[in-house]
Length: 184
Image 1 (cartoon, helix red, strand yellow):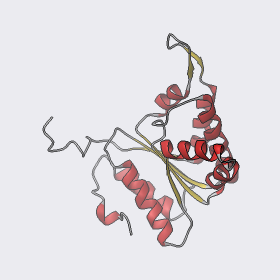
Image 2: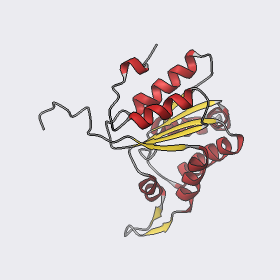
Image 3: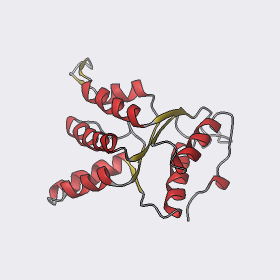
């Protein structure tokens, strides 16, 4: 069954994202980029969107970025990489959860660009979540030298440019709800 809106607490910090989620489910927008600090409910909201689409009978693929890259890497060893990448590229509805948490490399950047570029060109519905702002994601995807100087950040810019082109951007503001009531 999974999460529904009944399980989601609406706050001042997330009501814009919740409204956008409803538009996404209704198919009124083609994409959504949800970012905010850790623990603000981005993944849960993305899961609700995916569940609602699935309940309506639409195929949905929900992929966490680190797991997705691990799956693509593993399928590379089996000679099935093209199939794995094609499934992610072509699924009618994709949630890419936790962009920026994957271990970055030029190879990862290429796979990610290939996926988002195809989805952008084909106007396929896509939800992306991240703990990072767009500028932080671009920095994360940059190639740096041994001293930490940026050599090349074109890949990250190209990826974010496609995500921007297909997604409404919303930030969820608020404290990490997982920490509430925790003794720090």
